[in-house]
Length: 117
Length: 273
Length: 148
Image (cartoon, rainbow over the protein chains, first blue to last red):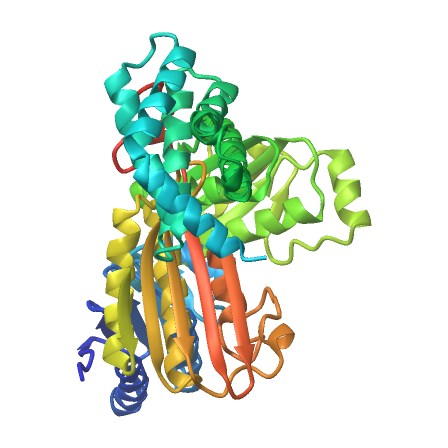
């Protein structure tokens, strides 16, 4: 099973999802992020989904859950790089991903975390 | 009543007299076609259909009916495209009956078989009409889509601020288009703010409001904030009376107001020289 | 028509890729491809998780009007759905409908058919048709490749 790598740069954790994730990998990511948040005391999480072609209700809910978990550790999560086709599909599914911020790319995501937006 | 056996016998008869029937059928069709297609081409088309008809009557396999439907649909489409009227195409199918009738007219013992066969051909002829109709409707729908594309521009108002002036109706098809164009432009322009102007939207009811909310929801997934502008006085009254809530989406009367708000949110200020 | 097993998480990933290819081959726009693959993901997951595993069938189809499309069928021999109406509850907010993602999947496709009987399993068939985009303006006597 592929485990998605989590990078730490300063006070921020970076996750870049590159492949078509299986359900197990998705759950593993949640666990790993929770552990790293506790271990590092990071203030923010950026999840880059630029390469993700499909976000179904399972993955959508995972993103929301990650947002909730992060908030428990006083960290904010920003989902960046969502593709237009994915956004339209999620909207049709009725998922608004409330509880997480979003941005066009990692740079803008960092601006949000640093309080510039 | 063994319809199956009757049809089966007809299948055998048609197979035995294949060349004669196809030949006569082709002659009849070519006469109706008035030179627009050659005898050879017609014979080729009809042979294919004939073989499928025989298979359907023989009930030999479960795919025959589907293939026959598909072949007839294709025939209807090409004929329509080549300028034939639906009646001409249906007539071509019906003339198969005539070709067969000429052969069986003298044998009284094939009456039930002929009747079963005739019923089948009637259905096939009608089907070509339906296929023609469906194709026309598709063309109209496609042209309407093309027109919609042309009347849905997305403009860049300022660095990071884009606007979508909506004119006309906002149904679900249009909403899909608006979302696609808006989101694509958000990415291309690297914009963080979108203004959706509804001055030109004739009626704003609950359905239209739902579509607007959906559009804003999609834009937000790309990190963009949205403002809805162009709310006319009558529209405002309708919105309130219908109990429509725009929640945390900013709304403004004019595009100018919306632009001012967007600039403010972007940390910009317009100063006289 | 292709038949694929749905018996593991890997199978679900394979089904997604297969549907993606079929959708592209069927001339569906990028957004429509995404919607169909997402619907397939939902349905495949249901087949695996609630249906105890099953089969996915992918087929290229053509409408009477000549439009190309993709038809998907997901069958399982699991416990079946006791209350279909409840399972298909349409809700704007997520989480409704027993979490089966059926109402969501239905919104993503053009045709949706569900048969299920407790104890006899479930079968879901969906179809998505290609739509015209501005690249494919209708022209007399011309064929437009990739425009369904």
